[in-house]
Image 1 (tube, rainbow, N blue to C red):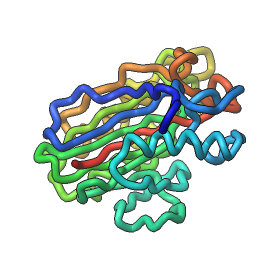
Image 2 (cartoon, rainbow, N blue to C red):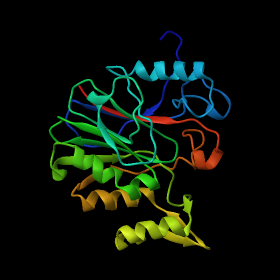
Image 3 (cartoon, rainbow, N blue to C red):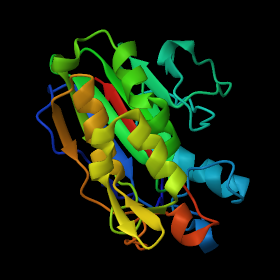
Length: 246
């Protein structure tokens, strides 16, 4: 659109098929102000609806087809993009095998995980906070895809980092109960724990047979000029992670 601010995105560095396109937005380049500045794409976090509309139009200008948003609830339901008709469905992951259909999720500390198969015939996007990881959202996403796990690649987008993300004993206990191997993703800090969402995701993916995993290089909390962070700011915006087939 004429006069639009320059949107800055992060593109995965992974050896995908030539027809796979993916990126995560940053907070840079939109119309919102205050705690939601600039490119807030979340429609339910208190921002001016007109600004959100402008920001989503900016994102849409980078994509091949109309976006369909999920009502994310920190669960493990996975839907196919073909199921979405414009009304928000409660789910936390989306798959697609159709060219031009964009899988999209919103985050602001939770871990976005993007998937594709080696042949470039299907993609997926998952919203994986600690509740989603504990509930098996990544396992469910892999199960919902047509390809064998060994044929899938995953990219871990920007999330709150392991030196910052402090959780209580109940979170540590829930992951240790799921699999004792998960305990290596936690470090004690007083009577609490530092949790490594990236490591928890890698462990979950390895258990279901996804071997090629990249990303996990950012901390949303520690880079306020680049990312929204709910844990840091409370009132804040949301980034989008998107993937599609050309």
